[in-house]
Amino acid sequence: GWAGWKTYLGRSELDRFRIFSMGILGAALLESSRCEEALRAFEATLALKRRYWSHDEQGILSAQTSIGNCLDQLGRGEEALALRRAIYAKGVASLGASHEDTIVDGYNVSSSLLNLELWDEFKSFVRDQMLPVARRSLGADHDVTLDFNKNLANALRWHPECTRSDLCLCWCDWLRHGFSQHRRRPARSRG
Image (tube, rainbow, N blue to C red; front, side, top):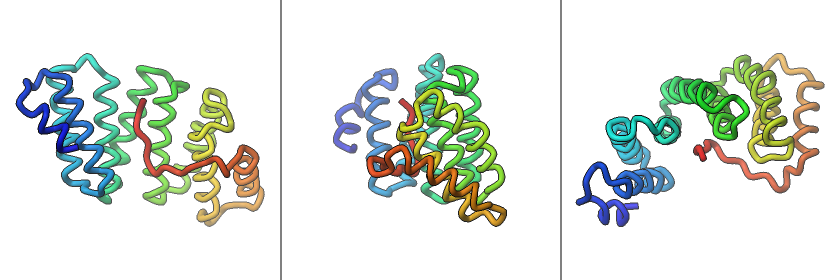
């Protein structure tokens, strides 16, 4: 974190090691629940990437993903959702809907929808759009696909119009693919 940042502080803004160390600093601050400071580090990283590496669209999307994760941790869910939707749309346009980074971006959108208790939108986005793509591209037993299944089952459990068959289908699918090997992560990073 700070040691890496201090090492490269005196270097030019154009130095890739400096910008890389800013990202590491932001990640370390976020991991230690210092979200406001992490947000400032990620925003500075994004500004430099836009200024000097505007052609690196994936690097910019990665920095924006980190900002979305910070906003979510800070309880700024509406802002996180808007940013995550924009990131997902750019991912679909540049990489395609089946690319793993785009699917991870979709997972982050679904997490925001779930956190904001937007049940109907979450249910249709995950069930109709994301799960089929994740299963086809990543496989039914991939970590991200399992996370989609588990979150869908939980959302259906909380949804007032959930039927027993809706819930059973989701939980059975999740259980069938090895939940014991599965670890939940609230938000994901690209690449």
